[in-house]
Amino acid sequence: MRSGVEIPVFGMVKDNHHSTRALIDEYKNEFEISENLFYFITNLQDEVHNTAIEYHRKVRDKEMTKSKLDYIEGIGEKKRTALLKKFGSVKKIKEASIEDLMQVKGINLELAERLKNEL
Image (spheres, rainbow, N blue to C red):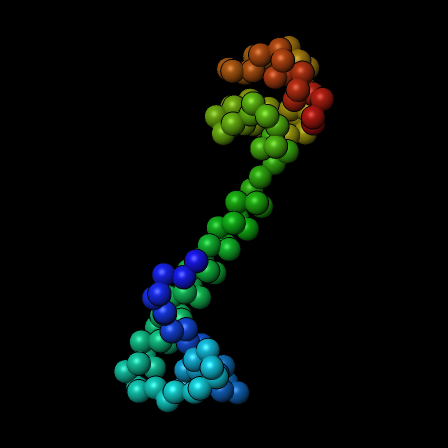
């Protein structure tokens, strides 16, 4: 649905060194840019780029620190931390008996059985 408001769209034209040299509109008309506008666009582009890189690093780092425990329903951060503190590793949690697992605060019989089945 159009509201009658038109917003012009521009892209950046790059040179062989990946530097912005002009702007281009949706009709492929190129516009030379002043030094001040060039500086502004470059700073804006750098900030967007840095934000995207930072976001993707956080996503990657978060994925790299996940364990099998993070995918088991009923195991949140506190229970995961308590399990790892008591047993030291996911491998040792897997090797523990149901009774041993139930010694961890918040781990009942149902959750201990789920841990054994899913690990």
